[in-house]
Amino acid sequence: MAAAEILAVGDTAATSGEVELIDNSGVVFGLKGVTGPNASVWIEVKDETGTWNSAGPNDRLTSAAPVWICYAAPSTIRFRRDAGGTCGVFRAA
Image 1 (cartoon, one colour):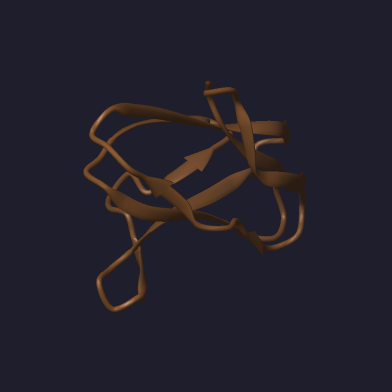
Image 2 (tube, rainbow, N blue to C red; image 1 turned 120 degrees about the vertical axis):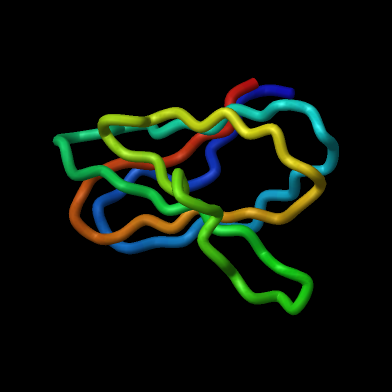
């Protein structure tokens, strides 16, 4: 699979579309276009009722921790950026 943009680079609040994780293989997500120390994107997972929930204690990508290696069961996730820090999200190949 080729690398793909999940959330375009920006500095306003934004939420990505849904990302389907369809098998138990590893997937790598990362920040791109980071400017400054305040870039932050939250990782959320969709439950069986359609409610979005925090993914857990390490539930965000930041300027200091810009990569997330995910070994997950089939699920639906999304990325949510708060206003302030400039960044986007990509899925590695």
